Length: 158
Image (cartoon, rainbow, N blue to C red; front, top):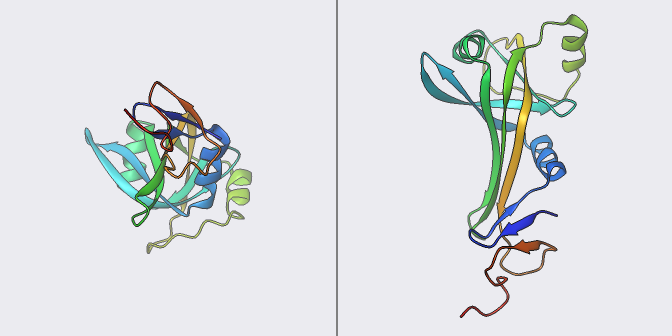
């Protein structure tokens, strides 16, 4: 389990928890720089050997990555009723997969794209950093290690 920052009550997720959440979600968002400005696109993705992979057509994503490979990739989930949620952020470099054997293997992954078009280009994000956080469970029912100087949510506050 992750630990909770006593200042923010955000649980910092472990590396394994981050990768589990990345693998279970079908849609994420990739942030690329296109013509000097950040743009964010939803993509259907998969996890392959601790990297993020997705397919795209020729366009803004491919053009932006060709000029500047550093990208951000994010998945998240929330429960509005419970006022809880989580987010995982991957920072790294993206590159087009061109090796025919690798493409053949990626084609076997369970990555289904929603948009129209051939999506003939596989891209891979090689992570430099993977971080995640979740709003701490105020019921105290989770086995979370609390850090910082604030009281646990189930303890009275002064």
